[in-house]
Length: 159
Image (cartoon, rainbow, N blue to C red; front, side):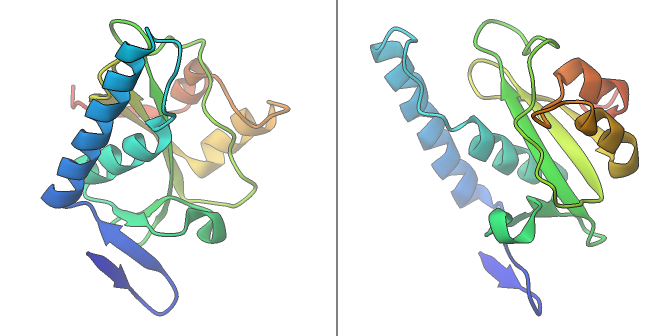
């Protein structure tokens, strides 16, 4: 369902969208299987954003490029979401990197870690002011998972 306020447009991740995402995941896994793991559909970012929004009750932005962030929380805070999927059993290695952060400000970032079957296993939250120095240390603005976690708190699953 598309909703908007004066300037922003977003969708709420409902059961129909989750079902569509699961279909995309099944197609991606089948494709990887048919290509013996050598080819991937490249859906991790989109799937991760939707799964994190669904899990945490966030509103997914329709146009992240013009807005500069991926979601809004219930307080209207701007949320940047990064996702990383493991290509083997377990979670992605901490040496892996996030995708590039844009120059746009946000209130906080979430890192969704997916297992090899695209299941959301962990979510880490880092406040913008704590994460910005970590991002700026990287020439490509893509910190390692370990660096992100060093200034973040795991919020899912709860300890």
